Image (tube, rainbow, N blue to C red; front, top):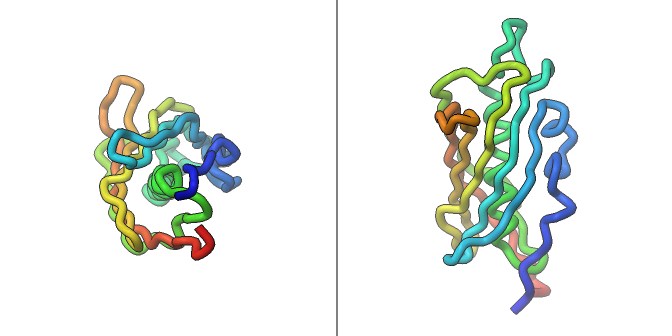
Length: 146
């Protein structure tokens, strides 16, 4: 069996410049006792992420949450296995995220099968109030050489 991969090179913007440009950063990740991955990070919205009134657009929430779910799934996979595509995703906004505010991002794998992964992610205030959340279903690519 292959060893779990290091995701260290993806810390920060997750390998996507847009995440950094809108104020997101992935900081820590791991695998829990059930071999399910997780990631945590921060979100300090930039002007690029916001409407003219300083509120983060819903699509920006979705970009951060989708990236967090992909990251935590990849953290759980081994060898050259990886996520291939987002199949389905829902996002709910409970309260606004504001320009230059500071928020906590968390992504967790809920279930991982041979071809499909299920994950959830949240953006919360520093005080722990839920700002937005998402669930998603992802196609998993399994390497034939591992």
